[in-house]
Length: 56
Image (tube, rainbow, N blue to C red; front, side, top):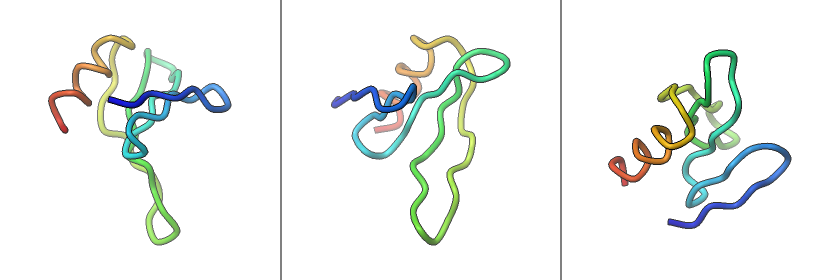
């Protein structure tokens, strides 16, 4: 799993990003020019990483 911090967002494998939300951390899929990113999961940072790990 490749994790990079860019402008306060954690980018994971260029597929997902984790950002600080109102109710904890939020996982989004990385949108492209044809679609916008959508919220997939909310939890602690560790829970978000686990959710991504299990989704790969």
